[in-house]
Length: 376
Ligand SMILES: [Zn+2]
Ligand SMILES: [Zn+2]
Image (cartoon, rainbow, N blue to C red; front, top):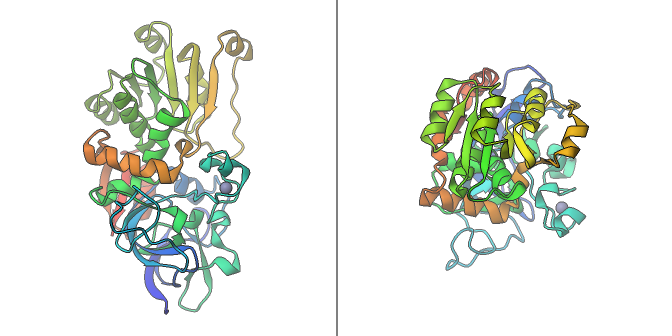
């Protein structure tokens, strides 16, 4: 099989513009599928790399939040029976709408055997596919280009491990399907899986970007009373429309304590700032749980009052990828979108093209809007 021409935005080094260039995509190898990208989000984790806050190899196609359509199955990829709906049973079919997972579990390591896919120690695509035997994207001269987390969604097409391509209900709008691959999974999973929010709980969500608003929707859906906190009036208004009982500006600790009669059952930090992570600890009641979802620059450390923390019996949880088991959770979230339970389409601030990525990253630096999505 011959190579396929694609366009991909290549990260060449910190603080350099992303330039979409013509590249060649190899056919899928054993256990891999070729995906025509339908949509991809622009996530804070891409920005951390572009701004040099997280060290990653160059040159790679960034983007790890995407959805597309399967065009080709590599050798050994299980073909699903036509009578089984996408996501309802094992296997893949050409034409499937798939949400791409940036941690595609290996199914063999200790974490995977515990069912903790999100902690997989050897995910497909680890190392951003710079190993010579795992290169699928090349420049016209044949030199290799890596792909971020094995999915590199800032491109018109990609070859990924089949386990990274999760078939979902084809009625899921592609731009929303893309968000399920990172922001939505991270926010919804933090509420449902990591923290286990229940009906009647009081929940504070700090930071109402894509992840925070997804967490807010999941908490509202769970039957919790939700307080949203952000400094942008437009995001506070959206939080109220989405069912938040209260929408407050940062620094309203006393107000949160008053509204929750002594502190919330749960607080979710969805920005990735040390200051808000520390503040979140003060927003929960004795026995309450703080879930840290946002990611800081590497090496950042937070301080807590250890005496009070122990005395109050609080809990501090880290939520990586919303404790995702992609093959289980992506189809569920997509079904909740189709049924209207999770109105994740409200996260899409603007639909853009591949050439608009730098402007979208700039908007993210300004914390302007929830999510910008490239639609191909
Ligand atoms: Zn992300
Ligand atoms: Zn594993």
